[in-house]
Image 1: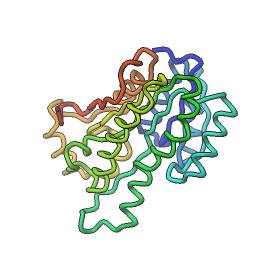
Image 2: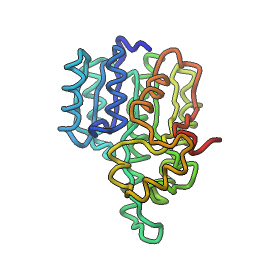
Image 3: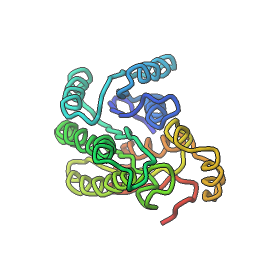
Image 4: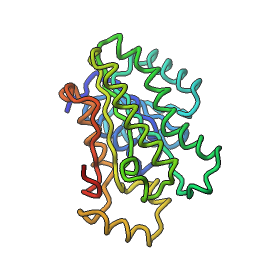
Length: 252
């Protein structure tokens, strides 16, 4: 995999044990200039320091992906600084284990704003750049919860938002394929990130391991490698696809 002269924007990359940071490390190690964004500026600065210390090229940016104005300004700034955006990784996401009857309208909107509306915002802002150059790679993050109806660590709003990501991905893939742009999706299962670590109790961890044929959680780097493959030039005939990364927990 070679990403020389490619510019990648990765959202939700501030977590130390997160998929976003792992993707940034994978792409930068293979020659990409990576822009790491997160609402947590210190987190992405730390990630960029790590990448740059290893000889990679990275740039941190603070971004609340649920705010259209911030997304618009961020994309403009990146385009002005680096010329374009070749790769968009929509990784930012949140989850809450609230039961259906306890979900408030505000909480429902918060989950959808971060997990779905942000992908709409970013894709819509980045597409003109990709269409202009007749090239682009978009990879969205869904979840096994989208297919199983939850049952892991998120409530109905989380499952619904991640299921919507699958449909959005397929629709975008059809619409932009003629411009040399692909849009694909990965659906991770239980991955050893700060998100799952904060939401799963010890009892839940034991129960979840019983449902995974491989008997373990996945690592962020395992998910990142698959995302990196979908972002390559060589994966140019794959679009509208969803790839499950869950150790056999859900097979379809």
